[in-house]
Length: 161
Image (cartoon, rainbow, N blue to C red; front, side, top):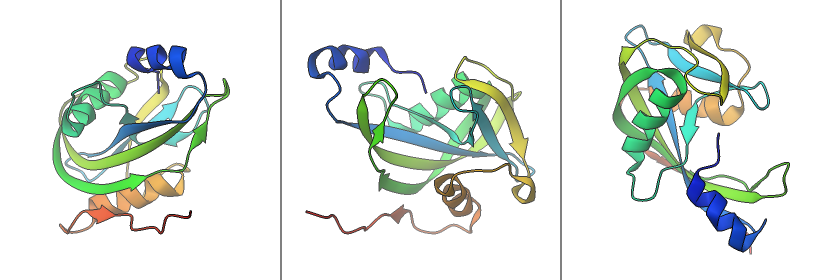
């Protein structure tokens, strides 16, 4: 995921200090029930489309924008899947971020899946029984997106002091 300019500007003032940020994950499904995945250019891992909202941008807008920017697929958000604070991430340059992730199920409505930016090395549609290796968090989100309609899932983890 590329670093937005507004975060680069913040880092000038705060250095590598932990930064709590919103994040959005889009679980994009097509009419055949396949899920859209991207292979990250930085580490080669397959993952769901995700990104950081621009200041003032709604999570649903972020899902649509990031899906287009990364994959050239047009999508429509359908429902909230999950709201979860993720563990902190330390990047190779020393920056520390912790994301509050809002995951949305989205339906593909146009475009043709392809690499559409420099953040991904591959893009593809995958049948649920033929997924590449994915982190557990991505698998959990796909499961939530493909289950019958139900309430959004909220992580009720106990915060340690």
